[in-house]
Image 1 (cartoon, rainbow over the protein chains, first blue to last red):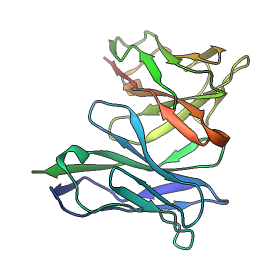
Image 2: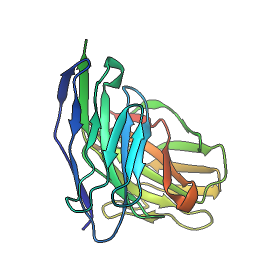
Image 3: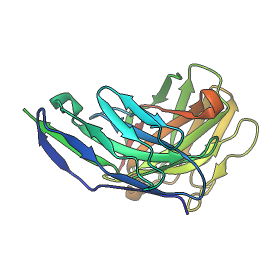
Image 4: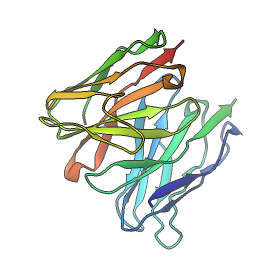
Length: 111
Length: 115
């Protein structure tokens, strides 16, 4: 069945370090791919998305590219800030249907 | 985008009681969902709340335990019935909106602790 596998956390980085959170998926068709972020004490927020192969989603300095050949959607940021500390969820979805979420990766950025 | 509010934001309940969680959306939406996020885990879909008909439940979730109402296109409730400590979780309301229903927005969640 459809599923999402995320890099396990927690991840701790120093401010201005490079971030990669790996995400791979298993799907029978061509889903849309998403990254959601959950800041402490808050609900999930959409960070970025990509709807087809080779699309790059980007927002707030974060990027992820939909790689069909490797079934991946890795999240990257060139220089993290303390305010990026949160839990990040990779997810896939077919239009009109439910989401499949990864288990989440907790990121802590220290000054 | 859709703005979603949930009530209550948190509650502490006794074993065997029931709690009803409300979800209000600022616009009419076709699809509303209820998720559970257990401590340290990812989100699990409980059910799709259908307007004018019974909710569609995912495997492992039943109507007697999680009755859902959807009286109109902007409101839904989820009841957690006969609670036990294992029901301690964050419950999230979500809606699908946007072009081809490809955007999904989440409420702030209801943090439930069952003693």
